[in-house]
Amino acid sequence: MKDRLVTPSYCLILAANFLLYFGFWLLIPVLPFYLSEAFGAGTSVIGIILSCYTVAALCIRPFSGYLLDTFSRKPLYLVAYFVFMGMFAGYMLAGTLALFILFRVVHGVSFGMVTVGGNTMVIDIMPSSRRGEGLGYYGLSNNIAMAVGPMSGLFLHDAGVGYVSIFGYALCSCLAGFCCASLVKAPYKPPVKRAPVSLDRFILLKGLPAGVSLLMLSVPYGMTTNYVAMYARQIGIDVTTGLFFTFMAAGMAISRIFSGKVVDHGKVTQVISAGLYIVIASFFLLSGCVYFIRWDASVCTYVFFAVALMLGVGFGIMFPAYNTLFVNLAPNNQRGTATSTYLTSWDVGIGIGMLLGGYIAEVSTFDKAYLTGACLTVVSTIYFNRKVVPHYQQNKLR
Image (tube, rainbow, N blue to C red):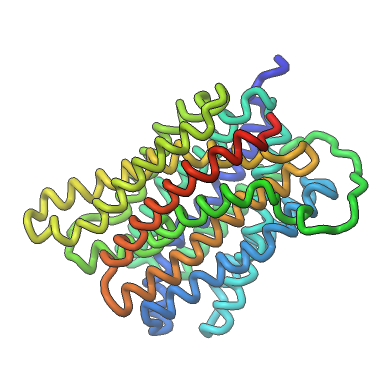
């Protein structure tokens, strides 16, 4: 019973995480259209506005890790969850672009806190012997939300549902998630006497090499989640682009079923390496869709969805492995810091991807943006194998 993974609190935090991410993903593919139609924003401006969210999230990440390692985690998690939920109501009221940007920044700050809080709490709840598996299922709740969220958002948008109504659906999802989160029974954590404030209290210094690799990997991911619908429209792929996210999430779901167990057997770096090679092929194929469609539209459609499935498998096996890698480099009293460093690296790349993708598309085309992202994944893979793997083997604590 000591190693039991499925408990009421674990199930509740999975539900809370799913509902939070469903509200998040519901808006991701819709917001570029909203900003363009409601405020007349151009592609590069949209990229800047969307990246405000990520910049705000990554600014709070290091501090959130420090706070979660110092104080009781559940109250901080619930406050952040409540603020995150409330910002959907803010979007409904924002009548100017400046006010929308303000709400977007606050939303990013709360997202940075609530995601670190959720990841840290789920690590506390699960047995350490099943951490990779537990993180895999926790991430799977994100993936399921990713499967139905963007598709639902695009379906509502294409059906003519107003943006205010879509914001309202996201708000309701997070309200249900907040109720689940409030019922989670977190283990007691006694007050911690912290050493004088220093850089390693906010950033896991031993995790920086892995963070650089993860950052480069997340740049094309940020381009994909935010612009793939616009890319498909630009090159003339006549499909329901919401299905791209469904296939991507299906790939993640399939891979997470077995990847977490492999990670628990100590093959952390091997799992990440395998995922990297899959992702490299995926992004080169995605950038090549602009040429496939000139040759055969049907073939291009199959490639487009195959890429989504491959991206899901690649990132699905890497997410729990990267998370475990960061946690294994940190002592137990720095789990929050390890998690925040992991998520900060990811968010920096996502933010760069939003800005870079929007800029390249403005001056050129989206396929060139994805080609740039594919090249970055190659660099990330070389750096990971030559620098991160030896560093991890020398510094891991468990």
